[in-house]
Length: 387
Image (cartoon, rainbow, N blue to C red):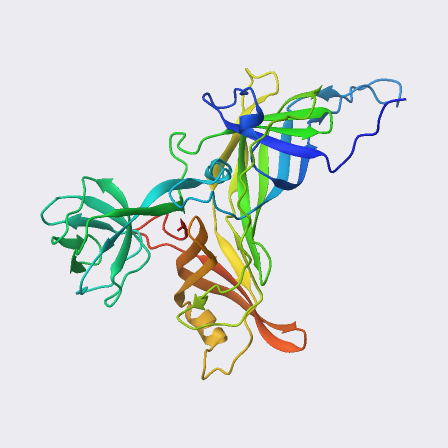
């Protein structure tokens, strides 16, 4: 009698495809992430043949396109070194995010500020350029940025290309971590993955995968990234579980000491949810034996929700902010140790609904919101800083 297969004995592997939609060979080096509840789903198109005939009996269907899905959750945890991407970074990139090196530089008094998140700054002496990360107002002495060209110098004047803000640098740039930001799909700049789910002796492979990610934060618990991938079924075989996998050893930080602020107020809340809202669509390909080349991200609409304790309107009027279409900054931190600390920053949060809520007898404002970006500064609605 054969042995039973155990549901919990599962792992996933993922590798960036050198050619979109062409399956890569997976190995232990591609399976370092620790996933929760990985599950593969199939939605094969079964063409119903119904020719006119004397009999009412059905005839056999024809299998057509073979799309597949893979869902799982990952803990939000660092690599242990702020300037080194965690293993999950390759997964996040295929959900429409770019990862860049994050630099900081010391600045003096800021005039005509703040420097705006996403704007390009230039050095008056070095002619270096960079892209600002986080609105930076007078009184803040550290400016975060992504380097674009050349290197800023100490003692030069930097100028914001959108805000016109200026400040004098007091140091040379220092690499301090990584930053992930949403990007718009353009000429294949969002890579695709080959993904495999190993299920205690069965290997299910998907190719041409891209996905959507939701972030969930609950007080006192690790933060999670909930992934929903679409791709093309690329084989189901009997294969032993991968061995010799070198998993990252950092433990995820709990969502506490978050220094959370929304619209500059320290709201009391128990959870936050953020949804990238990526629109995933299949690329039909009649030359493929599966009828599909890959899944493509064609649009996104980042949104979220949280549940702050309700306060008097004189303290903070959630409903008035909603009706006025006011945009505000959402800023919070997960973790405290270098190499395992993340800052989530959204500069243009707009309430889309405020309802009456209850949390253990405490009145709350059940808020839903969108994450926006200025027309002149696209792809700036959200940033995740690894510090």
